[in-house]
Picture (cartoon, rainbow, N blue to C red):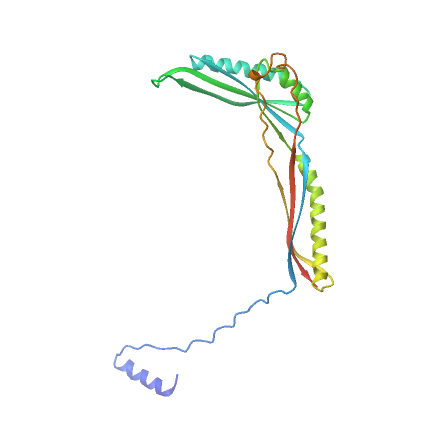
Length: 241
């Protein structure tokens, strides 16, 4: 503040005049800019394989109609219990209860005319032959509604471990080749990510017992699983040097 400005301020304060001070702004701090790294290369590598599905899930069902929901519930439970009892003790096959539903059927006037119900039992196994044989033996109790194949966690982990090595090798080969192409003698890894992904199995619908012949009802069903695509992605960046 100069001497002339100080005197003017003193006079203004003495006479009670409003004062507005304009202060010179302080020099702005120079923003520290991080230098952009040079010679950084972003890469992505992928490895995929078709892995045979080694698990099967067979859904068996029974449907019935009755005039009373309580009687229908009892009938459905008896069927499910009989199926579970038959599956019990079969080596290599696991049986569990599935969906259960009861709903009313109405006439043209909207009044309840009957009750319909459905119960399910699900067979799970890695032994396709044993599961097929058991499903055929249970055809007199329940019908086959759906068959689904999938990849077991153990098989998926084994495939991912093998594919991870392939994808990482591909990533390193890309880094080395690209560094050489850009005139560098080598590289160092700055950042890398390894991601696993798989493909959901496709359901395979099977023929119902009503559409099968009487002799075929107790015969084993032909079961052959498909494949699941297992993919490993490796992405990241390298510093060429």
